[in-house]
Amino acid sequence: MPIYQTSGFEFEDPAVFADGMTRPDGAFVYARYSNPTVRSLEDAVAGLEGGVAAVAAASGMGAINMVLLGLLQPGDHVIAQHALYGGTAHMLDDLVERFGIQVSHVPEHDPAAVRAAIRPQTKLLYLETIANPMTQVADLPAMCAAAREAGILTAVDNTFASPVLCRPIEHGADIVLHSTTKYLSGHADIIGGLAVFADDALYRKVWSYSCALGATPDPFAAWLTLRGMQTLALRMERHCANARVLATRLAGHPAVAAVHWPGLASHPSHEIAAKLLPDFSGVFSFDLLGGRAAGEKFMSSVRLALLAPSLGGVETLILHPASTSHRHLDESQLAQAGIGAGTVRVAVGIEHAEDLWADIAQALD
Ligand SMILES: *Cc1c(COP(=O)(O)O)cnc(C)c1O
Image (tube, rainbow, N blue to C red; front, side):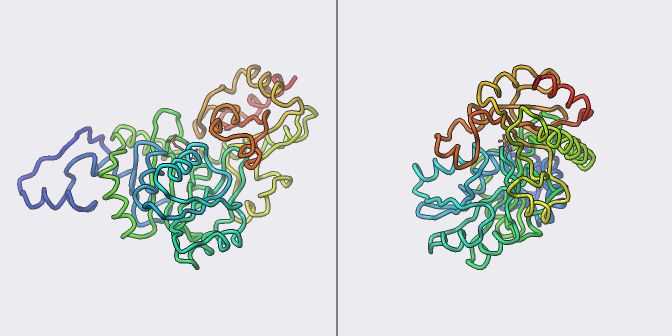
């Protein structure tokens, strides 16, 4: 796919020009509306997720804002799971404060809580396949079914699973969200996002809003994402395998209080995860017995793993959620999410597992 590095397209027929501005499947007119390189990415991810179409955005948060602002209005009610990506939790708080949209929170595994939370104004159920940073896995079939019975839409952030591990539309989701910054692009060199739709009318509605919102991706970022996606399946295999080695060994280490990875039988989501996912992705968290001080010492002692934000790239990254990704949460919200003061999150890369373990073991020592 070439990089169509252009803002606009030229026409011979004024009617074709005018028509292209009114729908996503007309002629390409202006890159804030659509661009062939971006469309190629949208089609590829829609195909992988089993959706009818997708709208790409300049970031994962751009995609999430595009969907929430494009579909909700003041007075509407949203049901969201407790454990959410930090930026999403912050954005939902903002919807409540500034847009008069009500939000109720439910556990990600409890369809009865969804049924109990539904009101006449409820429009949307918002879930994450695997939540950050404690890796709770949502019971997608049961949660989506509860929403569907009540006639409300379900949006699922599938960033941590990628379509290699989970395709939420197959489990009843209407909208699938991605931060393509992470596993889909895979090389920590772009920021991007995308929403996939199970339904054509929903797709057209959000596309129309995206033209007004303007959180449009650059064609070069879309091209790099397509390039990265060619190795997505191979990378996911290694991310999962590395996570299994490190999580298992950490769980047996005397300095470690707990390891949170859904592939471990001790994880509260293990049963749901084992039914839903063929493997358990490359992100896990752990708590050191020494609490925050030990966590900080550990993070400044690793040499191969990098102290850095984000995940899904080829290099292993670690961070301290309570002071970085989840800094917007107060103490009770941190406790609600299960995030301890000393919790360390590891986003495992595709290095050799033994090199990674050697680094982690020397840092623990
Ligand atoms: C990173 C991330 C986002 C936000 O994506 P950006 O590309 O950073 O805007 C949303 N959801 C999840 C689960 C993420 O990991």
